[in-house]
Length: 177
Image 1 (spheres, helix red, strand yellow):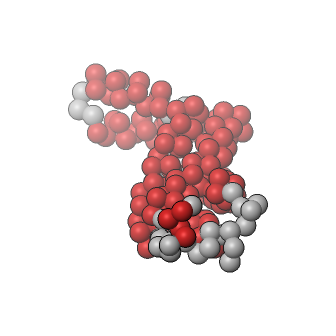
Image 2 (tube, rainbow, N blue to C red; image 1 turned 180 degrees about the vertical axis):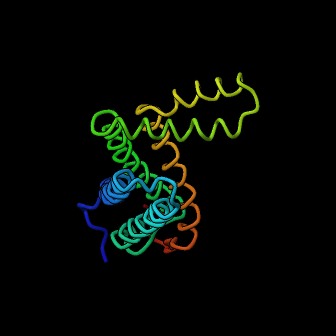
Image 3 (cartoon, rainbow, N blue to C red; image 1 turned 45 degrees about the vertical axis):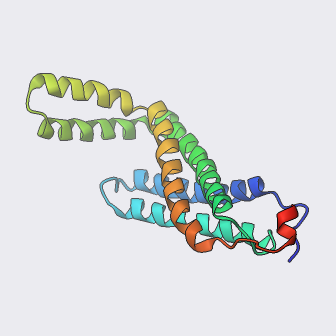
């Protein structure tokens, strides 16, 4: 298959990132609405979807690149896919906690307070832990942490999946591109 002139690796990552982002938003929304925050199932499902969309995006890239993809190109596609997805997810999370359901944010703070009470030994430690948690458990920091953690996981997943998906173009002509 010839490399399509209309094919853009960035657009490819954005498309698969959008699909992953919308899937992650749906899982986040259902997690909040159904109040299943302490279940591992949404996290496992989200991680599986990240790997799935990174693999699908890399396969589409390879298909439109004459069947070839270097290890670096695979990593780049995976990281960009997860970055775009995490930006969409972070926007949703910020909007949800800030405008749609601020009471859900308070529920998270209450859970954090219970955990801090169990884990701290003194009143001073507890106050410090609550001060930090109240800052972190707010829409802005949660959104930023979402972007950072999801993109990092995308990098990690890409490092592994690209090792299996790569196919170098070792032809004589590829040396002159």
